Length: 75
Image 1 (cartoon, rainbow, N blue to C red):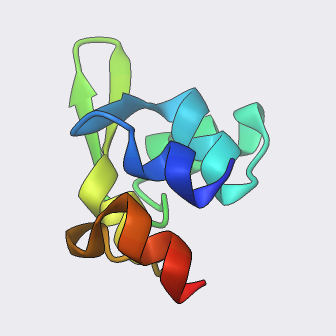
Image 2: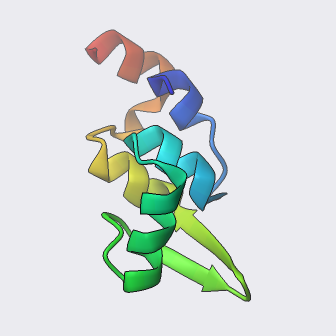
């Protein structure tokens, strides 16, 4: 998942998308979320998990405030 694609994500994303961005397999990602050990903040909404995109970007070292063009230039 590229930087531009990550910057276009909505405010909260499903766990599968976050797993893909981090490079985690589906089973491992859900296990970490269930144990409260996911590497960034996870919200439990009913039976679904959501990851806060800003936390994910911070984990990946991407500054969302720079914007898509500036972030691409900085790379």
